[in-house]
Length: 194
Image 1 (cartoon, rainbow, N blue to C red):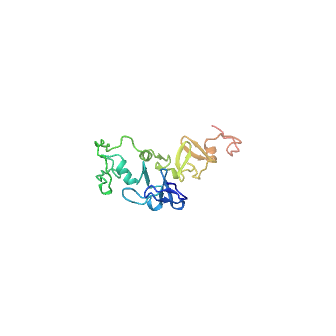
Image 2: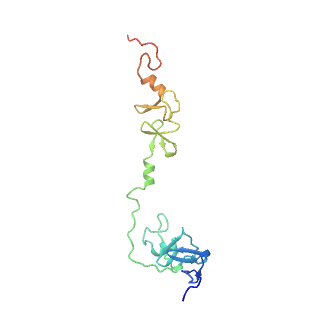
Image 3: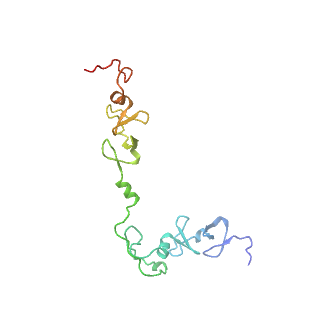
């Protein structure tokens, strides 16, 4: 029968869906009021829907019906799910259980590696996190520790020099490590050696 002036048919109730009330998912149209999980009838949106063939589910019910099964595949960190989904009308396939995951991970997560490999400040020896890190002399420093080792002046990229792993302002570096004699470092007399 031809569809005279109407929109597409709803994937749930098979009635006409007009543009103003249409939600599309997986190439099918639904009324906003019909866009519900097929198992628990929870209202869905684009962030909570999980489609399988012509069926739509919330992510929880989809995981119960089509997700991995067995020990270690629960609904949270380190739990065993004994929920079979029977109260939701889910017919779960019971196959051979999957082997349990090891209790200790063989590879540490990226977060754990970052926590272990936190840089240490050469001045105070404490951890330097990204929010407070300033690089100088090839090492990470706290903003408060990024000072001249002699005069204590706060340093910037324009006035910092480094020697033997320590930071100095350009003035202190010139006075202590620069060339000596007339015209160098503000000296007016040549120092006599005895």
